Image (cartoon, rainbow, N blue to C red; front, side, top):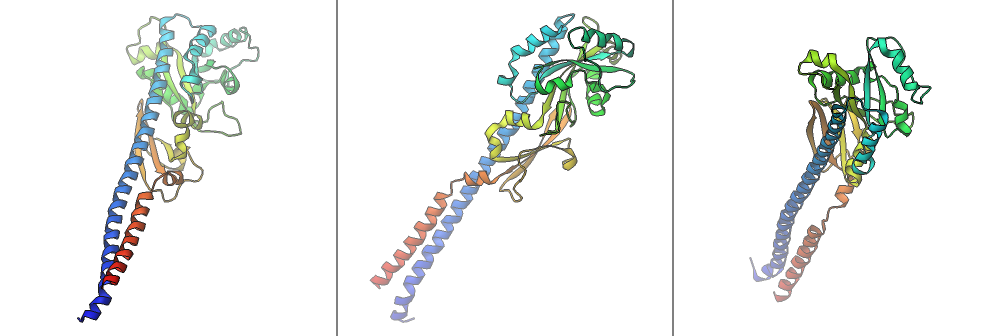
Length: 328
């Protein structure tokens, strides 16, 4: 190769070497950048799972505490129940819960007397719903706050519906807190309907043994329970964080449209940067939670360092090449 040819080729080689080095460092920076993204997603995903778990566990303690009210008293009247639940300050301390109530077990032989007794408390239109003859009846007689949507649940026989009945029977037979599958709450109207679920804990006759399943069935008087609307619940738990992450919650491990309880976005990202699937178990009931990034997550990521490296490396490669050309 002649000296003249080297003069022409060397600046080009220098520039190519500089661009190659820039590309190498850019790729390394991208790897670090993507790892930070992944770490950020993993952290937010775990935080969401933890917050859901902690909030459900807090609701469990609320129900167990209300069960304790019945254990400590031979007869909990409407005023006592209202005062107890009001002191919990649910709206401020636990946003997302629909309320705390008590469903009374009613033998068919005492149905008429029960209706008359509740009507005499100042509810002349009270009756059991739905109508019809059944082997046993239940009725929501207490539900606080006793306002707005919750008024629609007064007198409803939850035991008449299969999904609720399964959870109520499990709570009764095993003396444990249970969670129902997905239901449409009686609080729902035709507008802005949400999927719902309920949590139950049994209440037995005061001072009577309930150590065996037979004793529990014989001595049950009702259930302390809470209804939940999924959209309200998740907004209360996560708030603004929902805007960053796509969340889908499925009832039981079969994740499909039929078991979908909640979705945070009407238009989920078809190609999310990151996604994960996790299972949560509450009182023997499974939820499958799918998490994925939304466009807001990507928009919140700082890519300035990678861009700066690319621009700086390219300019330095060109300038070095020009300097060699001048010197040659």
